[in-house]
Length: 103
Image (cartoon, rainbow, N blue to C red):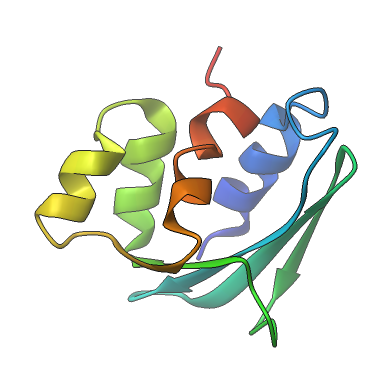
């Protein structure tokens, strides 16, 4: 995955939206390996690799993530059409757009 996409997530992170969270989002990218986000009490850490106990695991291409984060791709549509696969606490995935607002 290009680091620029992860850097954009860091700069868009809304600490206020994450103030009561303690969760790990694991991303498995079909074209860029694995990364995970640790969100705890309003802080964000982005790590490369696999977390041993993620709250939710999401599998997709980097283009799908970019589309969801930009609003060009509806996350639920991506899930229903198989472009996004999720395991674990799937409802957490719906928080991504509030944690990383585009505007």
